[in-house]
Image (cartoon, rainbow, N blue to C red; front, side, top):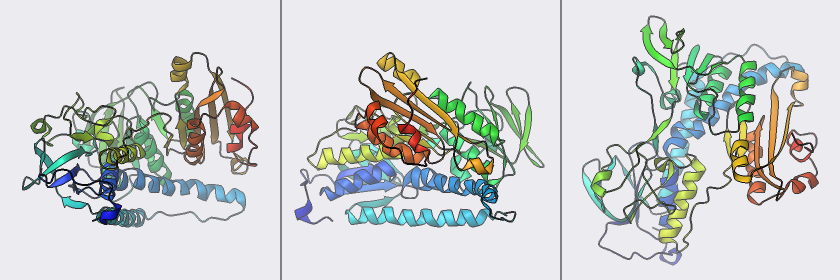
Length: 462
């Protein structure tokens, strides 16, 4: 345990086994448990799978490694324009998968050490409520806690239709024993978009279908249409207003019948059709905790459920389902309950990225949302081929868009698509959070030659 002189919290009620019991050792749960432990609370965390949750095991981390790997196909091709004679590359898929798995195991170990160093008791097994203060682990031993955090995350969802069992989700996509030669990606969110890029980059023939008019709902329309042109250019077959009607096994793969009447034989059908809060079989009704129609735990702005001492954070509350948001929520909660530093999570101007190829980086409202919030807005937009591709001949284009409130001159949003957009948007997010104006952007000297200098050289409104 943490030395007594470091403790900001003294256990108020020894009638409980723990001050704080956390269900789920994902990003939010681990951070909250660890910080509570460093504040001096007696903490337990229960996890029925690998430590680190979705992000570390079947989410952000392996996904980013896969996007790095997929991009090498472009790099091999582009190297020729820069004088390199590159032999036709061959792929050892399982060598990559094994290297990825080894890295994830290393991260699992880091999470375990972080929890142990904070004095947190790690319990392996499925936890559920017995009553509002009592948790059972694997239906076996029970533990009581003064405060309880529900941080069990989400789970991929596949809609009902004939043959749905022939499809996979992102959970399985990270462990495929071989690369599918032909892949059908179903969905239009960022997970679907990213995996279309991953499979295509590694050499699969990819078809992506989405039931709506345009993918990436919730993102700025200029970003959505720009990325579509980039995927078209790469030969990814993207179809909108289209869905799966049924799947059938064939001797040579899986036959997908689509809602437009067409058929497609592929080796893999991956569904990225949403994620649902993982609240089934938690015994929430025994604790009196209320959920919405999707199964998400209902919380107030302090992340408290309708039961005063039970809290929830991360994907299970279905607010902003991003790892750094879950971490921020968990940290706030631990500081509030045990650190004597009450505070709430700030959900404004959250920068985020989509690791498509090219990347998307976005912070602030879409143009449509901005017009509702501010009335008239000024739009600055540019699209161009990056310097690198003046030699490669690749038609990949970058797009950048600033949204400015003319009443205050503040830059309220930045949306960009292009190489390293995910990196650029982090610092751009700081500028937007700090209230930087268009005049601030204009008076900043550009870094030359970079694509990012366009952000400080755009002068003409659209």
